[in-house]
Image (cartoon, rainbow, N blue to C red):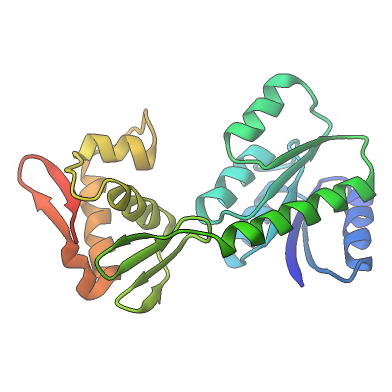
Length: 223
C-alpha cells in the first residue's frame, strides 16, 4: 500500500481523483485543498508519491514541490491547467518527475503513478550508498546511518552532510557550502554554516568527529 498526497483546489476534481485512487485498493490517500494545508501534511507525514496542482490558494504548487523535494525523493506529478513551456520547464527544474496538463485521463494518471512507483522501487533496490567511515548515506531514500544507527536529520543537515560526503577529503569554504546547500543568492551570514555544522556533528554522535574544521578554509569530512 502506497501513501499518496493529492493537492487540488477544485473540490469536485479532488474528490474525483482521490476516490479513483482509493477504489484501486493500492493507495492510502491524503488530500489538501490548498498549498498551506499541503505544507502542513508534508511536514507531518511521509509520502511515496504526490500529485500537485500549481494554481492553489496560499502556497502555490511550485512552493509545495520545493518543500516536498527538500525532505523526500518521492515521485512528484504536476497536474495543472498551466500547459505553457515555461511552466513545464520550471516544474521539471524544481524536481517534478511528471507534468500532466488538464484535461486529463484518470486511467493515464493512475498508470503514470504506478510506473513512477515501480521505477522508484527498482532504483532503491539497486541504490549505491555514499560512505565515509561508519557513515552511510543513501541519496534516493535520503537515509543516513551512522555507527549502525539510522538517523533523522533536518533537511539542511542532510544536504550539508551529503555535500561534504560527495567531496570527501576536500575542503569546502563557507561561501561554497552556502551556494551548494542554501543556493546561490542566499541572503544571510555565513555563520549559518557554522551553526548547522554544530548541529550536524551533534546528530552524528561519535561519528561527528569525521567533520573537520580547517582554520581559514572551511570544513571537510574524512574517513
